[in-house]
Image 1 (cartoon, helix red, strand yellow):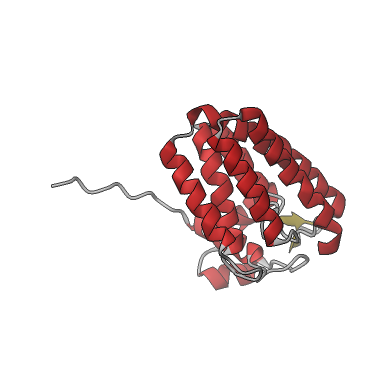
Image 2 (cartoon, rainbow, N blue to C red):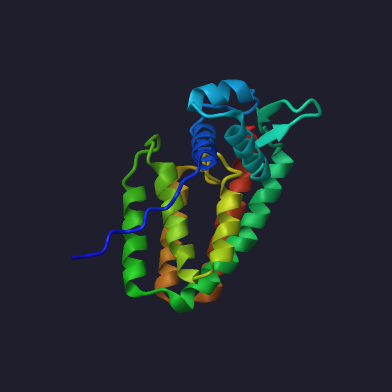
Amino acid sequence: MNPPQERRYVSKSDLVTDSLREMIREGELPPGSPLRQRELAELFAVSPTPVREALRRLEAEALVVFDTHRAVTVSTPSVEEMQENHQILAALEALAGSLAVPRITETDLHEIAGLHLALAACSERDPNIVNLNRRFHFRIYECTGSPTLLLLMRLLWRSFPNGPQVGRPLEESVRHHAKLLEALRSRDADAVASVIKDHALGSIAYLRDQS
């Protein structure tokens, strides 16, 4: 008989943080939306303390902002800020891709290819695109075995509520992913880094269309 698995404790502030982050990411709380602590406490049936903790966490992720009067709103990042985030993302993801190459297994490649095919089968407006795109990228970066690098990229991806690919045609993303998968199969670290960097920086061209 297998021993029971230990359950991870999830605090009230964790639950509020995760819920608000998802609401921002899904567009339920668009940029500029006011976040009133008393109303949020009632919504999540918690005291004000977990709400304050959650909002401070989201502030650290650049998802919300506090003004001088301590009012809180959902962030509205400028095009310049988003461009800078894409440049940082390009550098980190290129590093992660090159570090993944010597450690990636055939099982890893099979799972990555499966995610690529699932994304390629989507229509342009499929709601699964954002999640599949994220899973495709992070399944590669998990192969680095670097918790620090993964943590940094998760924080950075959260600055893009709907993912860094927003605005880019799905066909273009799929084409880039196919090139990346080919480079991974060839175990070519330089090619992997180059494809990833070009892919991340290519999103900058679509920023102004989304502003």
